Image (cartoon, rainbow, N blue to C red; front, top):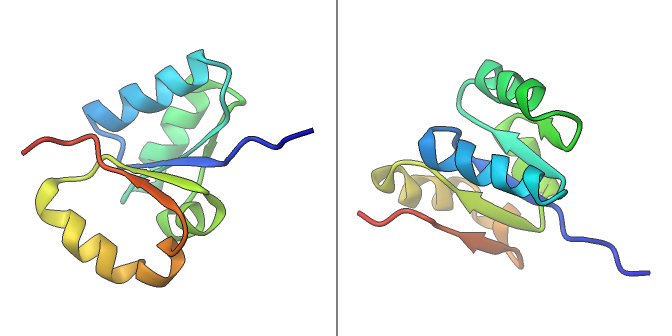
Amino acid sequence: MSQKSKVAVIGLGNIGSAVAANLVKGNREVIVADRTFEKAKSLGQKLGNLAQPQEISAAVKQADIVILAIYFNAIQEFLKQYASELEGKIVVDPSNP
């Protein structure tokens, strides 16, 4: 039996919240994380058991696929900060500046 990859959505603004909600609608577990843990916790409660709120650092470590729904200007710093944790993982950027 194959195990599904763990997906984390980092940044829970309009894009991140919509991506997380669509993953849950597709019956997919998702880790939700934001600079403000309360925002992740609130969205997790709203989306139900398939959405697991985490701090950003924990989400990056646990996920196989990381979806970056953060401001375009913050992506470079994020990649520097988490470079070693992101090694070998799929990183998706749904933004378009």
